[in-house]
Length: 191
Image 1 (tube, rainbow, N blue to C red):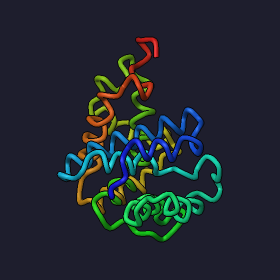
Image 2 (cartoon, one colour):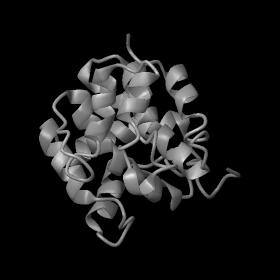
Image 3 (cartoon, rainbow, N blue to C red):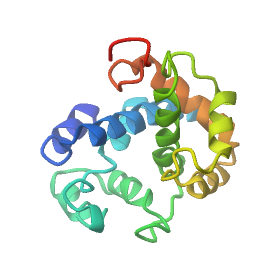
């Protein structure tokens, strides 16, 4: 049975409590929903996997993804979904190579949503009027959102057979409707 968003939120409830990590989980969740639509896949399922992807990060930042597999399998999360979550650590903390569209998407959008968020935070209208050409200027500036690994994003886009700008456009479109919830309404409004 596919993971539901409600179940993902329930599993994360005690594990992911810091506001910034909750926002990140939501960013990835909404970007994954848009990627699912792009691939004609189950939107809520991909959103749930995206929401749950950093399950162990807050409690074990130096052992990220080492406290995920056994724990989530014990909670009834499918092997397929656990593998997708593990694959976003490929070549970073493990050797679980992304092979499905879901896995490749998660690997890519995890870092990409960080740049989108940083870019949107600097704009008067946040993400609501963010266009991909503005984002790509920031993407090329290595000093901007320097912690977001551009090489990982590029590698993920290559795996997907897509251009960075096209994946970014999909992610932005997935995140925009949730601007208020993810704190990206902009500096011109109370958020």
